[in-house]
Image (cartoon, rainbow, N blue to C red; front, side, top):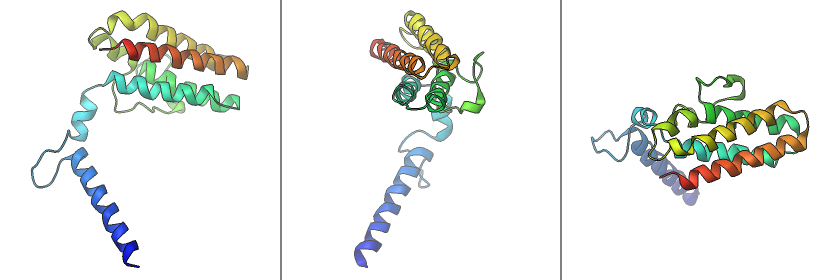
Length: 156
């Protein structure tokens, strides 16, 4: 009984510390950035990592709907909410991380030189979403993940 209560108290303490880090502490100590600051400063690397994760999910999918759902997540991360192919029904897994890889990469140090690769990933994601062939969609997803990994590796 005592161990269960101790575990709950430890978990509560961890949660409160994490909340203080994200939202700022009530005592006035600043342990990290506020939620508004995190959303205001786009992090293209975080968006790329999120897109790679979802492209990886798609590449390993066993059903076309699953593959296309995660390719949709990936495409939304690449283009951002103002992108011409952004589809809110897929969900925006990069929400709060920036304005989209294609948008934020232009402003990143050395990012302009990586735009052709990011655009290639966008084109592959679209192709994977348009096909009705599971293997083609998975191949496109793997290509997107590989291409974005290359972009991430070259990004300063």
